[in-house]
Amino acid sequence: MNKAEILKEIIEQRRSIFPKDYSETEIAQEIIDEILHSATLAPNHKRTKPWRFKTFRGEEKAALASEMQAIYKATQSEQTFLEKKYQDIGFKINKANAVISITVNFSGMVPEWEEIAAVSMAVQNMYLTCTTNNVGCYWSSPGLVNHLKDSLTIEENQKCLGLFYMGSVDQYNN
Image (tube, rainbow, N blue to C red; front, side):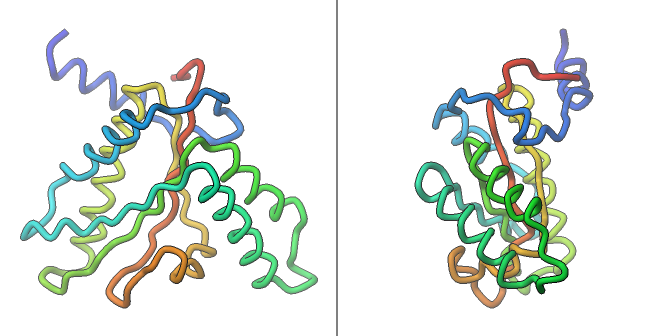
């Protein structure tokens, strides 16, 4: 198979796969490193490299789940609070083998949309690399991430664009 055919196949297989479908198999650190490295190869105007990623695993991931649940509870009125949503927030983070925060760093050198586009291309590279490694993944952008400024150490010129959930899948479904 030539490179074009291989690339076409990978693109066609790329899917969002949600935590409920992740297996208990741990993703090797080398694969997570490869996924993040592929993100850094995305094109970006004036080489601003506007992506900032933070990986959550183990205890840090559990703390993120608790924090997101606490944020949800604190930002909802009694009438809008849903126990199922509260539980689902914790389940998704805890079921994922790794969660990566996706943050854009606005350099001021190029229009903001270009830096958001570069981060989006970086995430697409992550999706494609996950696909080649039988890692299920999806990018979620809940409004709750706007309350993570302190725990993600987000600076004034930065904005969290969401969380990237990853987990092993026994059978990568097309």
